[in-house]
Image (cartoon, rainbow, N blue to C red):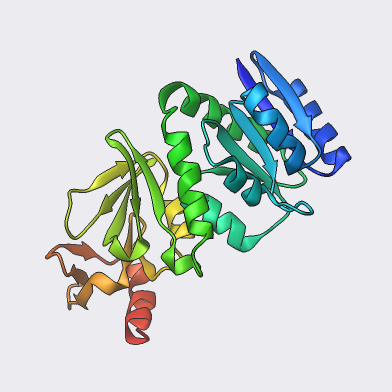
Length: 249
């Protein structure tokens, strides 16, 4: 059984989302809705939702303020929002889901299916992920965000500046660090390339993105040498772009 609490100040948005869930999400579920974060604060403890579907922009108190007020997060969160670049970046860094309005049915099904998997196999990670989001949102800029990496070994958090490189392995991504063993994460490198695009990372090969901070030099055989002593072959298609980026710092 999943217990869903929808929090949105727009009546039509609540109605549409509730109908979409009823029609397109299989399995046992219970759905309630609140018209404001203030109302949600009164409902959450008694209802004990497993999933909060939370609008970000609301008057008086936004969705992030609500999470701050609650202070403990033994539920999962899927944010619903019109486009807010900074908020979405913080959400993606914390490995949480968001849905852009108007909500797409397939995106909704995928997000709730991921919730069901997390609820069954990784229930304790929910509070850590939401906590990381709240922490990131308190930072003055996105350069200070911590990236959540969920692995078979547990949940880890890293500043992008402390990641040497990422290597794509089918639907997985392997992360390399200066002072610890690599971590394998079950998300594609394309996702991380988008997340890390503004954090000094460059694509040097179809399977590799690299933090420029850790690059030593590009040799005549098109091998990119890194500060940890490793090297990566730069693809022909990427060579000119990589050289330009390295020249421009």
